[in-house]
Length: 194
View 1: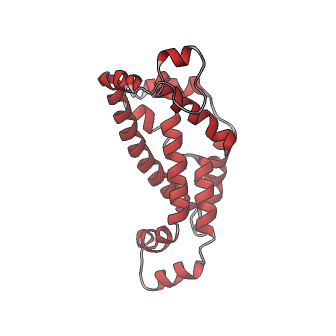
View 2: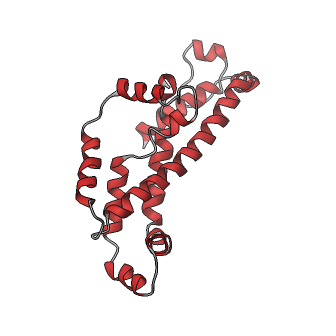
View 3: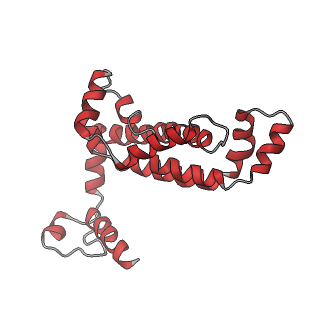
C-alpha cells in the first residue's frame, strides 16, 4: 500500500506546493508553501475542462455499449441448441490470440468514414473477447433448470436473458463495467490514431 500511495501523495503534495519549493526539491509527502495556483491556472483553460467532460461522456457511452455487446455475444454462446455455436466460438476466440494490428484497423476505420468521430473510439473497442469469455463462463454456471422452467412457462430468450440471467449476473457485470470503463478512460493511443 505504501509503494502505491507514495507516488500519489508526492504528486498531490507537489501540486499544492509553490514553485520555489518544487524547484529546490523540498516536497516529498506534504505540501511546502501551500498554494492552489496550479489548479486555478489549469481550470482557467476551458479546453482542459471540456476534455475531461468529453472523456467522461465517452467512457460512459463506451461502457454501456461494450456491456451490451458482451451480453449479446456471451448469452447465445452458452445455449447448447444454438446452431454453429462451436464454430462462432472458435472464430471469436481466434481473434483474441491473433490480432490484425493497428494498420489494418486504421485502414478499416478510414474506409468506414469513421476517422475524427466519436464512433471511431467506441465501435472498434466495443467487445473484448476476454471479457466475453468471463461472462460466458459465468452464465454457464447458472443452473440450466432455471432456463428450462422458464421455457416451460413460455418465456422467450429475451425474457430469460433479462429476467433470469442478468439479475443473477450483477456482480460479474459490475466487474466487466469497471474493466471497460478503466480501459476506455486510460486509452490514449486510439485517440491519437483515429
